[in-house]
Image 1 (cartoon, rainbow, N blue to C red):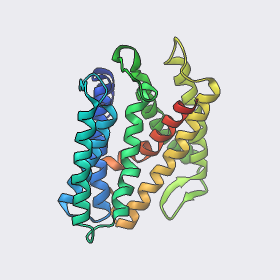
Image 2 (cartoon, rainbow, N blue to C red; image 1 turned 135 degrees about the horizontal axis):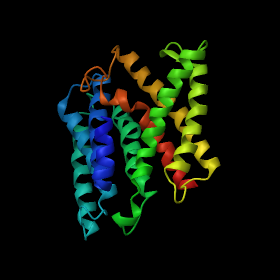
Image 3 (cartoon, helix red, strand yellow; image 1 turned 60 degrees about the horizontal axis):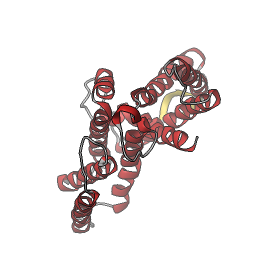
Length: 267
């Protein structure tokens, strides 16, 4: 999985990030409905299609798609929206509308922020030679992985007080605090040693970013764990043998992506 992520980010350009966002999003939405015990395939397919339509509309101005008439994109999206809403109306007694819209709040919005991170927001017109920064896209993964690793180490060494015993018995306050502090240090190091020519963040911004990603990444992990506990399952899926589902691997990433985008946008 790590090799696929790095390959798509660095060899696929921004189109690779778009493909990666679709892979994560499509499987995550499918697994989310599985956790909610929703079996109707047409409902799942319509929600996956809605996700693809929204993400495609966001990136339609990229040169890979070469849309010279934005009206074509808008009309296509509106056409699918009518189909999507029609499906929702037809099956309105079988599934809560709240669950469906929450799926997109939980998954679609973070994937939108992810595809916008390496360009630091919307860029018009988009120039892939100057507006795409692959190390910025990779940074969020590095920090999420750092948070998980540092929290595990700190928890093993110093963990005594349970963070959320009813949801995730293995997490401790000591692990969380140690992981957050060391992830902040990792963010500072990444900002200063990877962005060697011109750091994208000030030292303070990098440290705050690392701390926020560790914090919200942990919240994302706990939230997905609560979904699994309510569903009575150990993993969200089995697409990754020995590691569970895509949602299991990217639960922290979903929350962290929104946080990183907001930090970039507001700085």
